[in-house]
Structure formats: C-alpha cells, structure tokens
Image (cartoon, rainbow, N blue to C red):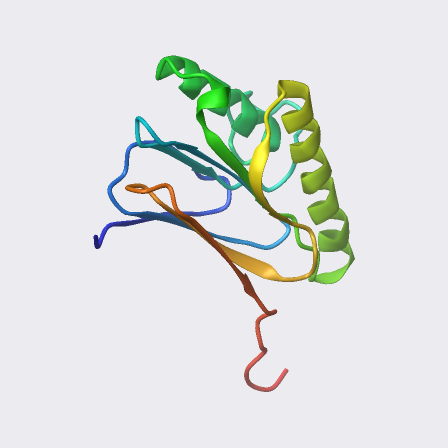
Length: 156
C-alpha cells in the first residue's frame, strides 16, 4: 500500500480508499468514521465550529462537517450505528487564540455527537500536543500520534 491521501485544514474525505488517509491537528478537530463491512472511511479536519453566512456544506467549519457526514451516510444507504467513530484534536498550545479555539472545537464536536446520539469509540482531545492522525482505508485501523511543539530553528 503506497497510496496516501493528506487531509488539509478544511478538507473532507468520505468513501473507499486503498491507502492511508492522514491529517495533522493542533486546535482543529477531526472526525473519523469507519464502516467495517463496506470499507467506507471518513476523515475530516475542521478549523472552527461555525461561521456567519457560511455555506452549510463548508467543511472548514464543524457545522458543515456534521451536515456532510450525515448526507454521505444517507447517500451510501448506511446508518451512523454501523460506523466506528472517533474524535481527535482540539489542542491548545500556540498562544491565547489557540487556547480558546481548541476547547471550543472540542465542545462543539461533543455537543454534536450527543445531539446525534453518536458514540466515539476512540478519542484523543484537548491537551497541548499536536497530533498526527492516520486512518487505514483498507482495515479501518486508526493511529493517533502525539507530537511535541515545533522547534524554532535559526535566529529570531
């Protein structure tokens, strides 16, 4: 398996993929889904819970992510209970802004899961570390690695 799909902030993936789907997280939050029978994978990366006047399917925002996930599950004629679900990210290491953004993203994700009666089987939320998250599109195996803060190189 050499294929790798990298999910940037605001990107969204839902479907079949014969490789690794990878993202890096700081204060952003990722939602992962895996349908073991149908080998459907989803990985998202949202920056903020919502934005005024945003397109309801804009996946830079949590509202758009949860809207799209529900649409894609219906499009694939599947039910949320058929998926293994996970929530990741929401760290707050870089200054005051990120210290507010991460916890807000985490709070929003948990509220959505509760409202939709979804259950996260895997969670790595909050804290101060960055995370590298990879989802194997063949097996559904998730790997969440905590990374320390980047080191500044050179003179200021």
